[in-house]
Amino acid sequence: MKATTVLRHVSWTIGPDPDRDPPAMCAACKDCGEKSSVTTDRKDSDMWALEHAGRTGHRRYDEIVSVGLYARPADEELQ
Image (tube, rainbow, N blue to C red; front, side, top):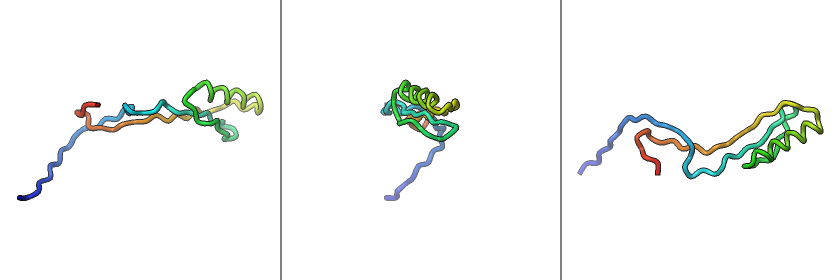
């Protein structure tokens, strides 16, 4: 008996991981690079940025968000 390999070309898609944790985020000051702690509650990172602005006068921030993603063939059903 001979082993056979079957290859197929398919389109892939990517989207939210169905088993993901809530998105994690932090605020990062664009002036000095200091960052808030990572949190799943946006209010916490926003409050850090406001307090940092009050202490330092820095006004520009990045919101850094991490969301779990899941890649799969487009014709595969999510479970």
